[in-house]
Length: 277
Image (cartoon, rainbow, N blue to C red; front, top):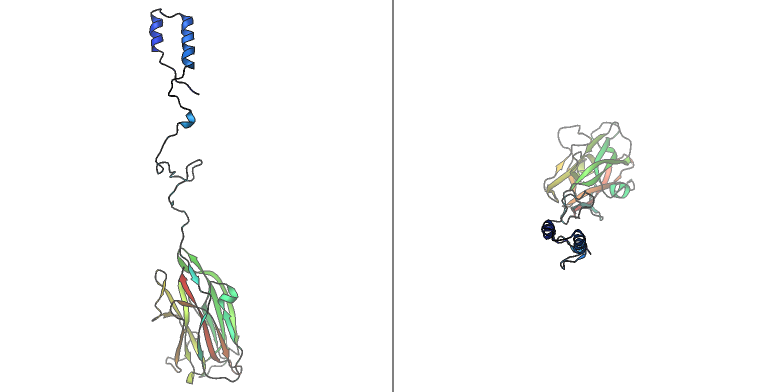
């Protein structure tokens, strides 16, 4: 236990008048050093009481500093992320032709390449000789991966291209693609041949995030150019639109074609929800 010494001033006064012998002074000093004061306290009990907020460390990287109770700039925070649904919804077009059809040919981005892949590109090839039919005879689909980045669902540089089907065709093919990283495919718009018998040319429908966590506008979506390009300036066949339901995006397609000439007779697109959770 520590002791508190008394003041030495009275001893100095007595010494100056010769009232205290030197030997007596030594004894008095020894007694003073050993005498408790009655209000002494162990140093371990002398704890400085500080308001908790004042004790907070404003610099969490300083060694030995106290932990800070409030979120500090740069701390990880929970952020809602875009999530693709697991259940597919389909939309279909059928020419009504049932003879000489192939089996289903497909490009399934989610199943074949990963949960965040969408069908963003189509490459179409024309029939082998130029004629009034002017139909698609070969089709490829490119799947592009999307990733959650700072609250947005954006395209990455990771892609995979699949051949959907191939008949006799001409080179080169022509490609339509969604290149804006925060736009999403929601279906196809195409010109059919006379009597709605086959598909001549494609467009991809697309939307973007209009309000936080909400895709739009499905009532008037944007679109890419045409592939293949038209050989005339006027429409010959009917125009058809296969579009995903509201807040859905296109994750793949499949088709059946006529094995005699390569014309697409049936087409089905696959859609999944895209929402923030």
